[in-house]
Image (cartoon, rainbow, N blue to C red; front, side, top):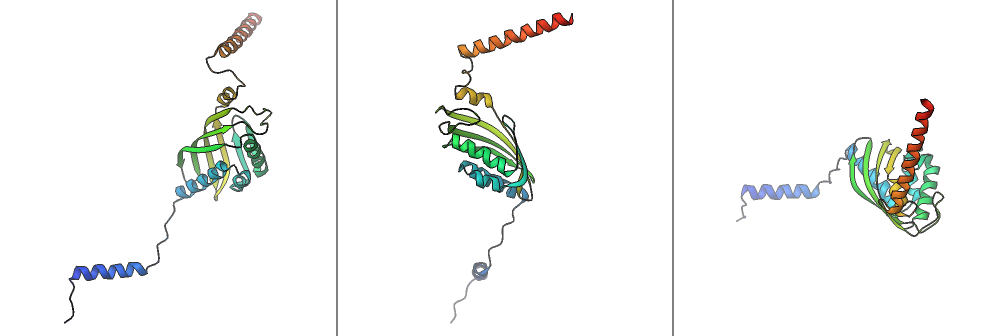
Length: 196
C-alpha cells in the first residue's frame, strides 16, 4: 500500500521543489543605494591612491572645489592634483566615518592619515611628519557620473601637524597671535585717527 503524507508535508515539499527551480529574483536598487555605491567605489579608488580610476568617475566638465586649495576643472586637473597628492603622501589611507546618500548627491565625512614623505606638494617639501585630516565632501552626480564636489578640511591643522605653524597654545603660537593682534590694533587706531 502507498504511503500517505499529511497535507501540510506535501504542500511544503511541493513549494520547496518549485522554489529550487525558480530563477533568483533581481534585487531592485534604489537611486540612493546606487549613489552610495558609486561614491563608495570612487572613495575606494582614492584609498587605493589611483588618480586615473578616480577621474573615470567624473564627467568631463566636472568641478571639484577644494575650499582650502582651489577649484579643479575637468578630469585632467583632478588627475594631476590627486597624482601630486599621492606622490607626496604615498601611504595615504582614507576612511569613511559617515555617509548619507540622496537621489543625486552624497555627503561624506572622512579621515585621511598619511606621512608627508614623498615628493614636494603645493610648494611644500616633505617633512616626514604623519598627519591626520578630518574632512567633509558634498558630491553631486548626474547620470551616474560625478559632476561636482565641494570638499572641506582644516588646512591650519595640517600646517600645524607638519610644523609649518607652531602647535596650538604653544609659546610660539601665543607670540604669533600676540604680534598679529598688536598689528591689528595698531591698524585700527591709525584708521580711527585718519577718520577723526
